[in-house]
Amino acid sequence: MAVSGTVVIAVDRCKGCELCVHACPQHVLRLDEGYNARGYHPVVLDESEKHCTGCSICAIVCPDVVFTVYRQAPQKRARAA
Amino acid sequence: MTIDTIPTQITPATPDLSGMQLVYQAPEALADTQTHYCPGCTHGIIHRLIAEVIDELGVRERTIGVAPVGCAVFAYEYFNFDGTEAAHGRAPAMATGIKRVAPDKIVFTYQGDGDIASIGGNEILAACVRGEKITVIFVNNAVYGMTGGQMAPTTPPGMVTTSSPLGRDVELQGYPIHLTEMLAMMPGVAYAARRSMHSVAEIKRAKKSIRKAFEAQLQGLGLGIVEILSACPINWRLDPSNALDFIRHTMLPVYPLGEFKVHEALQKR
Image (cartoon, rainbow over all chains, first blue to last red; front, side):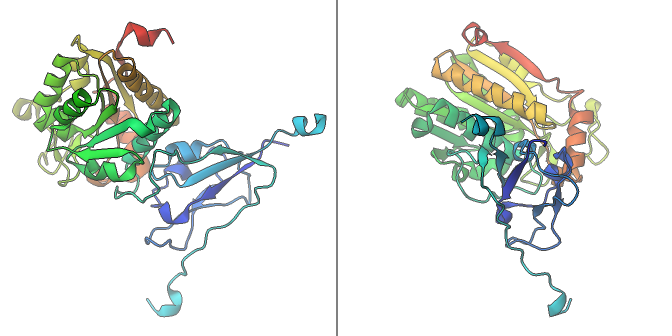
């Protein structure tokens, strides 16, 4: 199985600029139809087709530090232990 | 719009984090506040890179930032270290004073192109001539952002701004100023580089350059300056991703990226 990860999105920090949506190599980010507290359409993780790999590219391009990125711990080490 | 068609405010989802390792989180040196920057403005990325570098160097407790006049005028509000505000263009002079009174502090200025290249041109030249041990982050977005997108000294030839509606005419308004190349010639400058915010790879290079500029100060080598080509989607009348293409196609031919001066002590790494 491919590397899997996920992002935690600070919804109210997002300004809906879409830089992460265009940068995401897996195309798992899109803007939500709802609004956040500041009146922007915030970004959401949509894993209906592909899955997040935890590559952190969204966090690198985000001007508003919206993302906290997690990645699955290596499985091999867990088996060896 | 009737009441029942108003979309409800969304609530953040809480993903399952069992077995997950933390890969990236906001740096400690960055304050947990919302910035006033427009959506898609790359000032936020540059703030984050500075905060990450300061965390990596472990100097957060003794860092002092000097904010400019311009879009980044509230920059001191967005960091978890001390900061102050200088008169327009005078951030290098204020940083000089702080650094000379308290040489153990890490002092940097954060300036836009209108601040550093126009009204503050003399201040940065004089600071470089004196070889002050400070770090200068120069954010170049080719327009005066805060005042409504007027032509700046850094505006590329032919670019339309609110004060050059037919495009910058070099016969009438002259050529854009290449400040970083100019400063790199001075012996007091230990590190001079130009980076950009238009791609992931360039953002990573920009972080390395910011780190070297701070290391130049930590080692007492001289002034470190990093010019960063930044997007201004609002005043360029572009959406944020097209603004990055504007950097690629319009600004890069005028402003070549790279390191113009690297002190010997920084090259060994």
